[in-house]
Amino acid sequence: MKKLFQEIINLLEKGEDAVLVTITASSGSTPRGAGSRMLVKRDKTQMGTVGGGNVEYLAYQTALQAIREKASYTKGFSLTRSQTASIGMVCGGDVEVYFQYISPEDRNLLPLCRQIREALNRDADSWLILDITEETCWRMGLYTKKEGAAVPEDFFGAVDVQGREAELFLNRAVKREMDGRKYYIEPLVQAGTVYIFGGGHVAQELVPLLAHLDFRCVVMDDRPEFANPTVFPDAAQTVVGDLEHISNWISVKSCDYVCVMTRGHQFDYLVQKQMLTEKPCYIGIMGSRNKIQVVTQKLLEDGFSLEEIESCHMPIGTGILAETPAEIAVSIAGELIAVRAERMGRRKKDAGSKAR
Image (cartoon, rainbow, N blue to C red; front, side, top):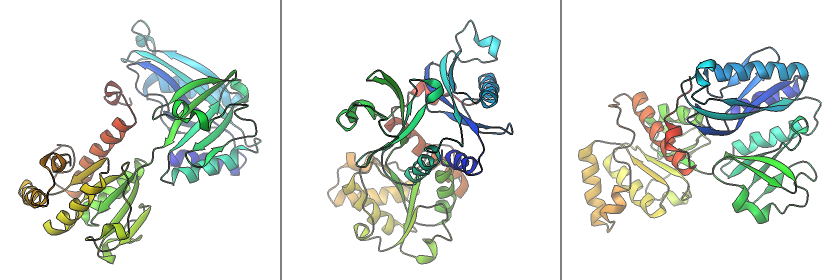
């Protein structure tokens, strides 16, 4: 998402147009759900995906047509059993796709895209809003909790947006009608930072992978040579501090993820003990089962219940028989993707779909 909006900014700054293709609704077993995007440029190159296969090809061709016409519109693709063969797909269902013409003549668009880029770099719940009442005259806005809306004047008319937060700003994409206008609203950023304790080989493989997956990462170690921007250029922050007093440097919230991969039993124990009291949404502990048993016994002696301790992912990562630091990083990333998807209310049958 970051790269996509950065490319839109680059195009607008150069005075070039493009079409942003977005799935705004889906039903059945479709390859990608609402919020999937690709950007199609006038030079016929593209970025992102809306599911691959012939559906993406047809969407790509429609986007080129939208560029030629300098127009925006909605188009539906039916993937029902009687029609899937004709478009080369196996999945069944329907998708609604919005083709959003990006014009450099829209003076409101460039500053808004810059605000979206800034929001993607912050750890705050944010939503992207499209007013698609008139498809050809769309308007886009941004809503961030505690900061409100960054939208064109009179974007919502007389609607009290803050008074309807619970209805409008969910953990999934929705379409809403308010005051006779139609809006498409989707989560842009879900608050939650991945705190990685220990800056060793696995962390060095993990951070760039997570950054590519739009996780915000912070690395903490008590050794400056293992926690610095040179070693972790993709981290939002690196912290050098005493692992026995983490709260002096870091404040972990319930929406955060914690990966414990320090250089020894004692440091892992110290970090896990502190994190169990903070109750983040995910705690993963790297290490052998023997090491985990030793640390578990010490935590039991400290008064933590077995249920609390077993709520941690031990050992960290999905079971893919990973051995190398790069393989372990992939297994951890997979587990974090699953936890994030569950928090966002993603359906299990959707999670099994793969881009073709």
